[in-house]
Image (cartoon, rainbow, N blue to C red):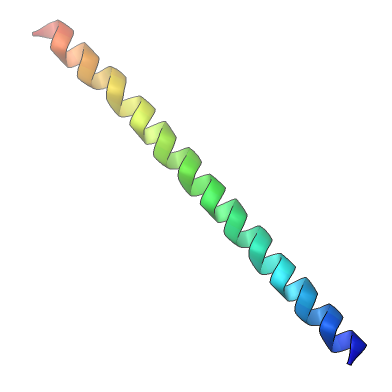
Amino acid sequence: MFMTFITLFSLIGLLLVLGISTYAVFQYVNSESQMEKVPVRIRDEHRR
């Protein structure tokens, strides 16, 4: 019983870590793409 509890806890911990890491990467990529898009718009306005 104790071993099954440890395995379940470790699996839940791994899932949480994976979920948080994937969420952080997604947020980082999303912010990076937004930062790249904004200067392009400003440059296009200046060219016109």
